[in-house]
Length: 192
Picture 1 (cartoon, one colour):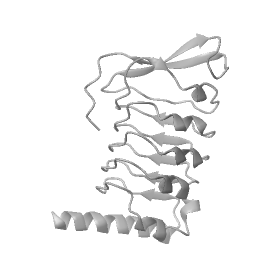
Picture 2 (cartoon, helix red, strand yellow; picture 1 turned 60 degrees about the vertical axis):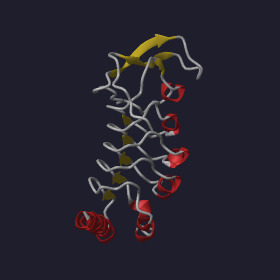
Picture 3 (tube, one colour; picture 1 turned 180 degrees about the vertical axis):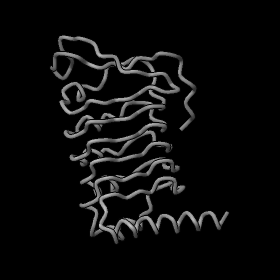
């Protein structure tokens, strides 16, 4: 067990050092058995955080991300968080004004993370295989998003996006609005 933990720590250190030494715009910490974003990485990356545009934390064991993560990597264009145990995003996700794509698939979201509606450059949100249940109006901030064009929700829990013609909603926008509709009974979400 200790040997595997040591290997995981060494892998994270190696990947972080590769990013710094190569001047890469990508930090890939996928499948590193992370339960949280290592605090020491902030110090190691302090001189290159503005040039990092893609972070992959896929297939770890993350239950949350901190506000410090969001404000430190505010130049991100893509954030890949699929395959974790996330159920919410910090409000500071709104600092990611350049974010074009976020993958939140295979997590434990029960509600749409409405903070994402404030991101002007966002084009892709992947929420497949989460625990978002019931039929409800889509967050109004997405109604007026001119950039958003891909919003997958399908998967085991059977949700899909339905566009409906409306005269407007609370945001005052007329036209097509998305509704989240349940296609089949969802699996029972785990207790958080």
